[in-house]
Structure formats: C-alpha cells, structure tokens
Image (cartoon, rainbow, N blue to C red; front, side):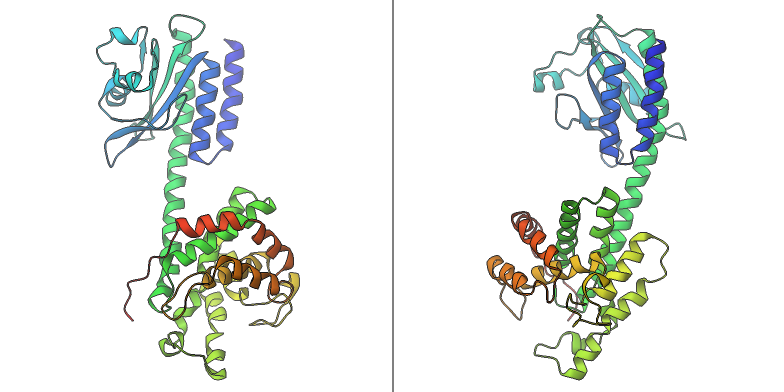
Length: 368
C-alpha cells in the first residue's frame, strides 16, 4: 500500500503539469489502471447540453455516450456515491449494451464520482476488471477516491481552461471576420492562413503554446482594413498610387488596434498586422524591413497569405493551381519571401492542400 501511495503522490504531480484535457484524462486513465491493477479504465464527463455521460478516452473502445442516469456510471453520477461491484451481470443497474457492442466481458467495477467545488457531479471515474483478484477491495476504493478528489479539481480547471480558450478563439475569429464585411474575401481564408502557419511552426519544433499563438494571431493580420474606405477596398480595378498609399495604411491601423495588449497573443498579432507586407529584400511596407529584421511570425504569414489568396477563387479572379502558386513562391524566394520558409512550406504542400480542402471557401454574407 505504501508503494501505491508513493506512486499516487508522483501521479498527482504529473497530472498537475498537464493543461490539455484529453491528454490529462489519458494520463489519469493509465495511472489508475496501473495503480489498481485494472484491465481497463473509463473516464466519463457530463455533457450538460445533452444530459449524457461521454468518454474523451476509454481503454479498448472509442467514444461512449450514455444518458447520465443509465447504468452503473449513471447511478453513481446521480447519487454521487461510489460503487464497488463484484459481479457486474448480477447487478440490475449494469448496462450490458456496451459489452454487447464491443464484445468485452465486464466482471468487476469500481466507480467513483467526480464533483466540482460546488459539490455538483461533473463525471465518473470507472475502473473495470481487477486483474490480480476477483474484484476490487477497500484499499482500491481508497486509492481511487484519493485520486479522484485530486483529479476532479484538475479536470474542472482544464474544462474551465478549454472554455476560456474556445471563448478567446471565438472572439479572435469574430474580430477577424469583421473585415469580411468590407473586404471581398472568404471567412475560411483567415482560418487556413492560421493553420498553414501553425503547420510550419510545428515543423520548426515550436511547443504547443507557441503553435496556438500563431494559429490565432495570424487571422488578425488584416484587421486594419476596417479603417480603409470601401471605395478603395472594393475597387475592382488597379489602385492609383494615391489609393495604394491609403491601402498600405491598413498595416499601421492593425498595429494600432492590437498594440498594448497584455497577452502574448495580441502582442504577436500586432507585430504580424504591422509587418505582413514587409519583404525579405526590404522592398515592402510600412518600414522597408528586410531579412530577419521581420519577425518569423510575419514572414510565415506573408507566405501563407499569398499562397491562399492566389489559390482561392474570388469574384474578380480565377483560382491559381497549386503548382503555379508553388512556382511563384520559389520565384519570389529571397525577394518577397524568406527562402528557408518557402522551402519548408513547399515541403509540406500535401498537408497544405488537405487543409485547403477541409476548410473550403464559404463566402461572407455581409452587405456590399
């Protein structure tokens, strides 16, 4: 028992380090299975929108969804009381449908509720089939209760983190989409550009936090276009020199909108908005920066933005082929674009095309 308690302490440290909900639940499942000598572990979370218990992860099966009042898990969820079942098929509360669907034979079950700070149930921790005995004992129950008490707090925090992250993402894309009511692009253009940059960042070896920042910061690169008059922004023909000088101001406008933010996301987005029209050879705007004077985030955005714009159909042009666009990137390597990033981008062209197909164009429905 002492060894298991020691392992439990070490396990809680590992759980505390993990922010990603899915990864944390996989870690938690593996820890519980090892500590309790169980064959399988399932972690159910409650979906308040559907009143279902569902598994982000469960050993041996894909996602399971059941009403939050059905089966052993449903009973434990509703009662908030743990259950130790020695023989599942002799218990009338056991739902045999999952076994019938998977071909698995459940024998012993130990199920513990997760409760939040308000003592409301948020899920179920369930281990199945003790491998070294016919059923789980009181020590197993004690270990799982200790683990679930700690894990519940981590799960609640992770759920809150996920909700905040999704809220942040929603705000970012809503703000970015605002330019779509002025600029004749498609809303998935900004999604794709963010994913292209994220793909390059992953290839370079950036960590998950940095990858998330580039994915969300890049879509705001043209937010400054909200300050450009429609007569210029929507002009079908070539701009005059004077009109182009006004158009170029969107880089500064975007920077002014985003600068001063406290988060790394808005700080990165501000720099991208400012620099995404700078060129590797120094002929871009607004400051004529060159080479690595331009942030890597902005250099990535420049390649991704041009590639996606050229390969997308607009009311004023046909889409270029992927091959022709890749050739243009090569021609502009060392002039408009960072040569190393062009090489990296083209090396991932198959994945770029898949992103392009998955997030196909859906035109804005704003007023002209």
